Length: 102
Image (cartoon, rainbow, N blue to C red; front, side):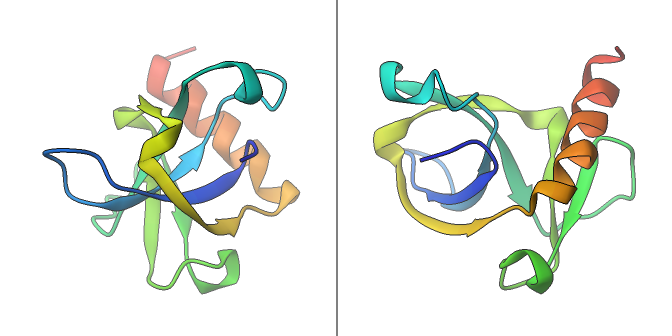
């Protein structure tokens, strides 16, 4: 598991969905949970979203939603779906800044 990867997550009492891993690579091996942004098909076109689609390895048009970032146990992320291109990371950072008004 690495920062910028998209993983399929299955948590108890929640709808299964993909998540973008946000936790820095150095921390991932030593923590039990990672910070993630959920993907959703409900795109609103706001600054806290990063649009994703087939070019990103995601089956359907969706977006990573940075208004709903959360921690999730690594054991609930069951398979890697895709990897964001390094060129997309500035969009992730911009959405994160927008989400916390920084």
